[in-house]
Amino acid sequence: MARAATAKKRSGKSKKAKAKPPAVRRAWRWFWRRLLLVMLVPVVLTFLVVLLYSFIDPPTTHTIWSEKRRLGEVDRQWIGIEEVAPSAVRAVVAAEDANYCLHWGFDVDAIRDALEDGGTRGASTISQQTVKNVFLWQGRSWLRKALEALITPAAEAVWSKRRMLEIYLNIAEFDEGVFGIDAAAYHYFGVAPRDLTPLQGALLASVLPNPKQRSASRPTANLRKRAVRIADGAATIAADGRASCFED
Image (cartoon, rainbow, N blue to C red; front, side, top):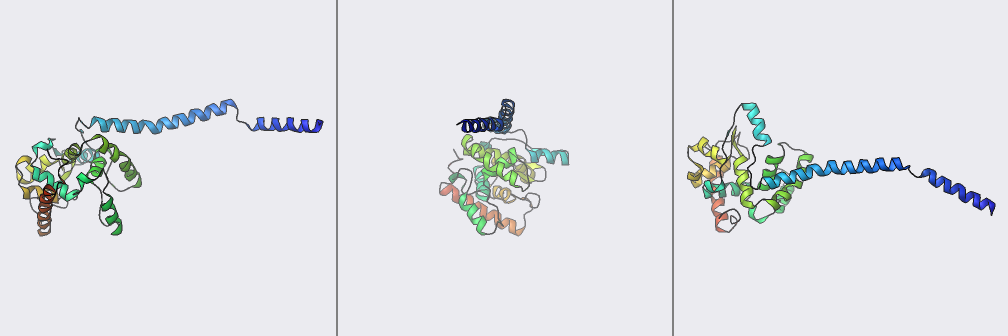
């Protein structure tokens, strides 16, 4: 009995010896709380900015800032979506994301088709492109893609489709240092965006997403054919209801 009691006593001492001292436990709790705080702060701040941009226009983007720094100046003027010819708005949607009104940030069918083609064509929606331009940076990286995938649903939940498209139209690059459809309309055709013809709107949309290699005012034969297809697509989404989410 004495031996058993002694063994039990030693076992108890051994367990106590293995237990972490209170100071160590407090240090670990402090570490995990701080880590959680560091992870939550950017998430909360990003959501607050998303909420803010639902009624305040983004002052700039990383691309606009970097181009202004490189070129010295950029051409950009923010306008409301109601100041743009409806046919031009539809042309941009038809060119970049014809199913814009049918998804909530990600076009699953387009992603599947892109994967089947071996990733040779893009599948980014207007929502994804807007989030990338407003909150992130250009270039291909898994980190940027992951952040884009996290922020896009938040933006879709807070912004209306019309607001999302309005932001996109004002931050998209249409030529070197030319940002937004207002600057693009004057730059290429010398007209206000509300006066763009269906063909002019389609030509502007046709330079996306490679504005530095394409010109809406001096289109190649292939680019002009693309513009005609875009104009037809714009008429199609107007007729079949796929423009209803961003039109009054």
